[in-house]
Image (cartoon, rainbow, N blue to C red):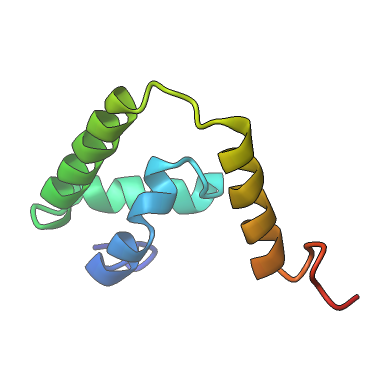
Length: 87
């Protein structure tokens, strides 16, 4: 790891965000740089990437509208923005 790089713990903490393309470009570059150099972390990345791709390949059916609505409303309630939130 270079002085500008990140350690294994920080890399693993950001692994799913990297896989889901949720990191800003500089952070994603740091994580990728670490993965390219680290014999411990890269296999973890490779496994989780393959797992995500496997699950995505098996989830070809869209949830019914009512299920999607209930999930969305639950997420809004968790954030305090749903119809049950005290505003």
